[in-house]
Length: 163
Image (cartoon, rainbow, N blue to C red; front, side, top):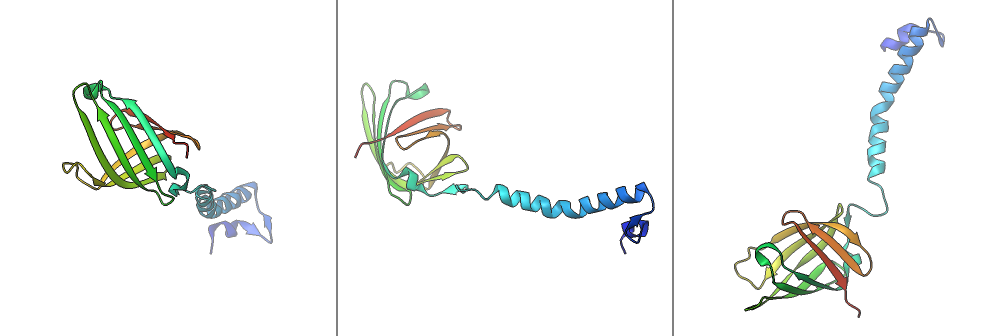
């Protein structure tokens, strides 16, 4: 038998206090299901937390100058992304006295506002794969992808190539 029912008599409350106890009991009884419902609603949106890479499909170009220890190095990268997020990438890094070319493969995925880049194959045998890079998406449009790699303090803007 519930505590609050001892305070009631034929649907009427014996006192104002009994009414408050009943309201509090009802509130406590309904709060957990309501809380679960609200949590489930926040997870139900048109764009899920893990989005397919179809939005990323196409050829993306990245041209940037190195900073820090890579100061003066020009990097040009061409990344071709399939509809399922798999990509192939070719990069050329040019400094005043050296040109380094490398290729890699992997997957791109958008999750929780981040671009998750999982490198599964790399031409540099010193790179341990899989190598996962997580960068915050600053802006994404049909023609531009701006990211910020918080680990390495690197900003990059990919531009979609005209096909």
